[in-house]
Image (cartoon, rainbow over all chains, first blue to last red; front, top):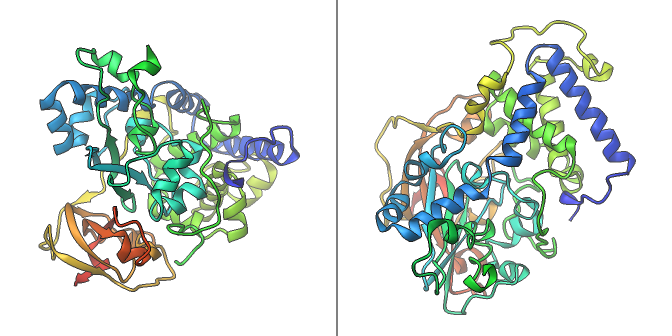
Length: 207
Length: 219
């Protein structure tokens, strides 16, 4: 969809965006609202530090430590606090657990609310109109777009993020991972499976 | 407002197309827009709900066709002018023409970054007891405010069950219209898909929204 059409790098439209954005930044810097180095650092943080590896560490620990799993389900903001690479994980984070009977999916139909503290900035598909429109009505067709098919008798629970609460899916631990370290387990945990648009990798996919 | 942003349940947008190994930003200007959006937050010139509403107010033709961060850019630039942090002639000139007026604090620097990379709290002390409890059957109101609301169209005038209470939080419908935070109890309300989408809906699907108390009445 046009909302995330990125194939026009050389087009005049995006050149215009480069110029417009540069001009606004110049004005903000010259008027003393922001320092360029601080903007550089924010970009660097989102490109290198605040990403889905944080969520993957949380999930791997929850799979390995029943006490932590319970703490995560009871109060994810609190349980996740020490995992943030910058500051701490913000308030209102809620973890919801997949089971053989129920699969959770997260969406924001009204804008693009996403558990950024633990997953980083949302991917384009999460912000796209197809995902935002279809997930609350026909999530199985959305999962099919990701190549995921769930048994017909698996209940699907969709969480529409219409307030400041943010949802993180705790996926099911794949079979064949007994004795795996948290670092090994984290390699199975994709961003998409923590939003419910996917399932964790199988051990055979990372071996 | 009943805008094009309220997309839950709409048909016709096609397939979801995940991009393998998608970069965090596709263009440098996108990263600068994101960074500026975060940084100017420290001046508290507007709230998150005001910024959402500013995007909702864009013409549908623009909302549907402009890249995500371009919408953020126009939102930022328009609000900065509207709130008097910068002036329209400066935008036209591409640089500052006069010192900042009424700047409430010094520039955003690297030492401020932690304040904007973690989310703030929207919880507020409750001013009255919660009207509903977990397990209550509730009906969402049939409301169509022309201002900002977080009750999506597909979940209006529908019966669901209260599943969680989240305490009192800033009420978007109020704060976005300049009427103050007016904290309201926030609930997770769960609906059967057939209540939302009719008899043909997936019988194994349940959908929840986060609903502020003024959106709800006893069913």
